[in-house]
Image 1 (cartoon, one colour):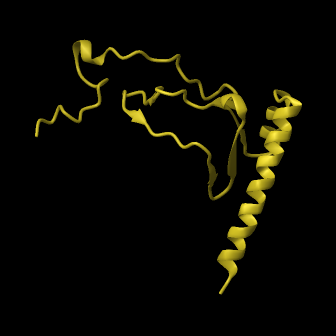
Image 2 (cartoon, one colour):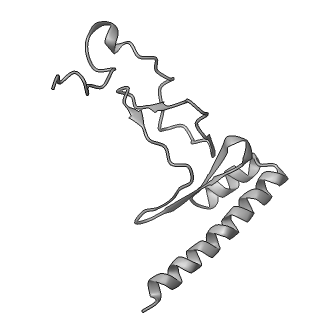
Image 3 (tube, rainbow, N blue to C red):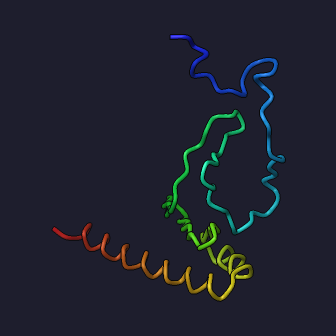
Length: 122
């Protein structure tokens, strides 16, 4: 098998390495509390040009902090990780967005309670 078949498009010389890039990411700047879902046909690419898989709704649990991503209508996503992120997200939300987020969190709360009960059952 030709080893170039699976090569990342941005790696190489000449025209193959000319991939459009978004502005540089600066980790010192504060993160925006809103993300958006990819539109139909859109894909996300790594800095090396490799496609990145997307998850639609996530609640990732880490050893120290849990982040909950709440998908709102219109493609907005609010990430809630701590008091500061909730306060920042709240500032940019309409009453309708807040109600939608609270409803989704209540649904998640019920799902978590059910999962906990299943885990604790003999």
